[in-house]
Length: 203
Image (cartoon, rainbow, N blue to C red; front, side):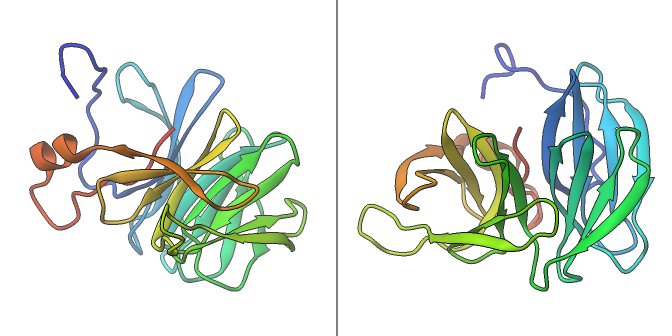
């Protein structure tokens, strides 16, 4: 990305970004690490934190989604989805019994698309997180694509950041087939200073 043409805002380097989303003109971020995880509302122009809720110390924050006036934040290994109101105040929890990586909403079915780090995407009932269907994501050679992480719904496609790679997979949500790739190799090369400086979070 060219700083002359792209928008950049300051970011707290102690915040390990996991999930990002835009809602009503604001940027919302879920961050990870046990004892340091949080969910926060950011000014997309300045990067300033406008509201924040810290997670309990046993939780490692992961993917973030918004559905019907609530925010849903996955946790990595606790198997718990944390639910918040519009002001990021906790309102409840949902259990899913596996690792939680990425979460987004299918605007047509009104189901959550959920990733757990494998090659599988689950589609969940947002009321109780019961799995309604599953697809295995495969590349052009029919091979499973694992490490599916942060998810977003883009013009009828499911986009998935592939953990520790420079790529986002554009997925057909009906079949799981990868339709194409978005590569960020130059962005990674220019900004990767430590092992944790990887692509994570998209909105």
